[in-house]
Structure formats: structure tokens, C-alpha cells
Image (cartoon, rainbow, N blue to C red; front, top):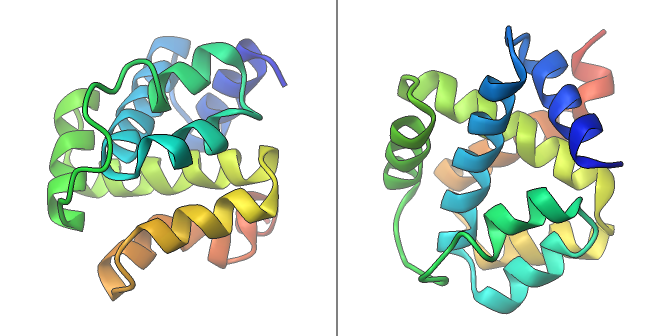
Length: 138
């Protein structure tokens, strides 16, 4: 999948009106996520993604491995994307589900292992745990 296909999938899944909105949603979710997980894990997760998308997890992040909670994650996504927190949560879920479609399952498990094992962070995997977008879209 290339950058245009990735952003097109995000735009379609989120029913956004333009590519710019899809890019903002992707950038917001992945830069916040890249800030939360260790650099090596971000690099592993990014390796199967289009170069322009992997940048959000790696190159656009200056301080990996920060310890912040789910609410702070949502605040960061919402602020970067310019949406409210409920939209930020759903957009992040959809982006993570698309990433999970493209990366090895071991990288998704590694991502889960790097996040606190609490109910809040499990929200990030809401679409994925519900069977993924294909099941959600039916």
C-alpha cells in the first residue's frame, strides 16, 4: 500500500471530505503514539508502512517513550487534528486498525505490550478487537 492508498483508506473509513483531513488524522494518531512507545518499537511498527506514513511514528517524533495516560494521548490527538476528544479516539482506533492490517501481527502485539495494560488504553484497539474494519463496516 502506498501513501495515497493509505490516506484514501483513512478518508473512506472515517468518511472525511478530503485527503488533508485524512492526513491530519493519521499524523495526529501516529505522532502521539510514536511519542508514547520506545523508539525501537516505533521503528518496528513503521517498517511495513508507506515511507510518508512511517515518518509520523519515527522522524516526526523527537522524544519517544514518554509516559502519559490515555487522556493525554487523546488531548494530543485532538489538538493536532483539530477535532474533539471523542472524534480523536475514534480516528485513532481506525488508524491503528489500518496499521494492524499492514504490519506483522507480532508488531501489533509488541505495541500492545508497550502500552499500560489498563482499560483506557484498550480503547485504542476498539475497532481491531471488534474484528477490524471489515467486520465493523458491515
